[in-house]
Amino acid sequence: MIYKLALKFRHALFDKGWRKQHDSEVPTICIGNVTVGGTGKTPHTEMILRFLDQDGDWASRNIAVLSRGYKRRSKGFQQVDMTSTAAFSGDEPLQIKKKFPGVTVAVDKDRVEGCDFLCHPDKLQTSKKGDRCYNKNFPPADLIILDDAFQHRSLKATVNIVLVDFNRPLSEDKLLPYGSLRDLPSRVRSADIIIVTKCPKYLSDQERAMSIESLKLGKDAPKVFFTTMEYCKPTGIFQQMDTRYIYSQRLILFSGIAQDTPLRNYLSDSYHIVKHLSFADHHTYSKADIKSIENAADKWPTAAVATTEKDAQRILDYPRMPRDLKTKMFQVPIRAVFFSEEEQKEFETTLLGLMK
Image (cartoon, rainbow, N blue to C red):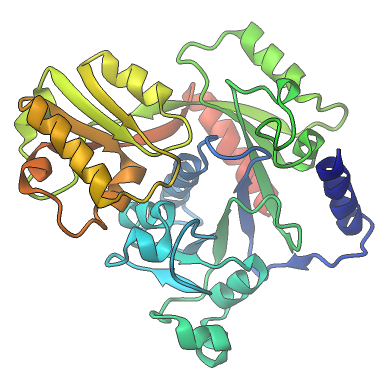
């Protein structure tokens, strides 16, 4: 009850104009949610980046991604580059940078100031944060994608995209600490676009209708889209990877993500999972953790070792990975996809229209 009242009071301050909201000088797309973890923000950020990279108006423009950089050890504003580590930047920003090298990726807890620096790199040169920034060379942004900034009301995004997990209806959830809601469920009405994520591969019209009904949107509802997660071809994490292990019948799985059941179910279709080591989301792998994985690999010497793309960024931080594990270890990338080309086109048209 106290948490709910605090949320209502905080939102009222912004809604009534008692606390200031700042506009960015360039269009901003906020990708967020109202729950803790597991709605697929990173795959959807990547989905939008792929679209913008192919769009005639935006393909040649300077696009930036701004994230908090959860669990990073660095402070203040930092640019993520191809040589960064997950400990420095956070696992998700590093993953995005490696997939989209031409995109400026930065981390800053202060989204307002972070956007200002991305629009005006010269300001970073003369600021106190600039003294701690290791790489200050990047072009001024023409568009900024804000990762997980829906609760940052001090920054007024051009487009707010809210993600809702199909498997966790908001109407059946509760506020923290009794549930996974970190914000009022009614806040989804403030979105410009809602995407119901992690839908089953085959989604009926009835399931779509029930999902929309559970959002309790009322009049002037934002447009609702539906996506599912598509697992991609496994790839090695280390150069020493022996690709023959990908075709092994046995698998050792380790994961440190919010929800690893879908990944396990997917891999179970192709492998006999002999061991699954499950860790907390954004887990930093210790010597003892690596030893547990190594012990499992010794017990099942013909088994491959698999993890998620996000975990792979953190695994690369480990300084003394056993060579035998390097030959067996691969990552399983995922993509957020729409159910049809028509739905994808409608989403893209809607997004571009809101950005004008």
